[in-house]
Image 1 (cartoon, rainbow, N blue to C red):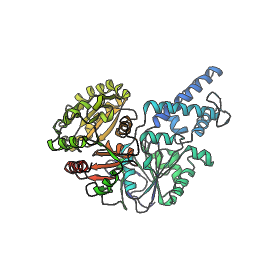
Image 2: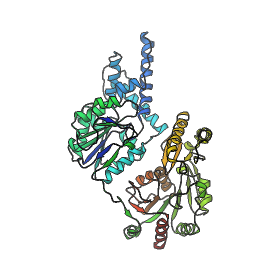
Image 3: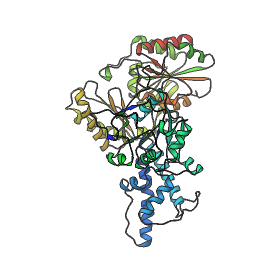
Image 4: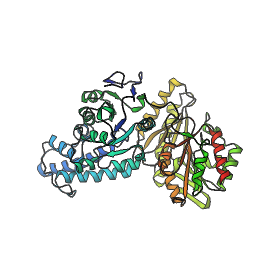
Length: 527
């Protein structure tokens, strides 16, 4: 197929596979394993379902109990397939025949539909408890594609795709969605049949030959190939690239960070400078009052070698004091709340530390996210492992926080960064309650559940009574963690990235902290 260098190969770290966009106008993404890491949630729900069923059957028939394998059985029989098809596929592999029953069968019914409905409940219980983990490189690629004018669709066999997208805060990154509900309503065939992908291309106003498919499941890759799509990218999360290549992938990468897109992508910044466009921003304040949310490091202070050196200037502090006298101002930072509150030193601001896990402000406002507090012991264990493991790497800095632990590598030699990340990944395996996120020269281990700056900002707007149409939220930030807030406010506020982003969900940019200060001063002057 056109638009790719080295067709049918597996990408390694020594090469950066190129994907030219000049031959495409649409991109279609699977959800689980491509955008979000919910495969483990699905696998746990499937195992709970089938182990309960098989154990009861063994007790009743006297047959030996052979449990569901959450790796092999999951990949062979249920991964990427519609829920009820997955039930039938696995039972068939064990020589078990059950009637299909009716779609509204109760969970206690010994039918395909009954078991599938029970699995759905198990999945939602796991989802609510464990949250949604997002693959950040996939989000960055989505932003790059949309900035280049490529239309995007989500295709999933899951009937829970909308709930997962909503929980991850990614709904606005797709022009349309086709999921298991459409599959049932329209009578389409699931993967490996190409029906869902072909319909997505049609609804995006494209042809399969002009569309790219991103899939991690063998059945999904096979569907993309069967549909005659212009390019099929396989994402190998399990160390088995050959199976994806055999199924029809044009190229296989272990993560979308390895894929470089070019061609029609604009060389210009995809967003406008907020100072240059202040008139159009200010015009929105004639009938609405602002509520301002600000990151700290890299937004109010320049990025420095060590976190303790990020001292707020007297001029910026004065600007914040004046602005807070005229509207609500909140600092939303990855730092501990007490730390950022001490650095800013103003009493009339709201402080949301640890990405919003710990919140304090005027009038006795004090909130600690109770789920975040439950992870403090895990953070302490991770910190205890990280410090000795990184002691031999010059420049590596471990910054323990109450609800997270950060590993800074700004002062680490380039050829040692991979070693730092390897240590972080080993600790992550030993402390599975945490998940890894990134930023500017930092890895951070945070509680593994669905909470981020975007959800913190939406919660704060509600807690402060600022959800009405007369409120115009502002969010200004400079890091990957701020993208969650940009997406959360995409359709309701003013979002500004500080720096020179390659891709961002923000509507405007400011070049540096100096421009950020000038913008806040200008905003103060019009209130």
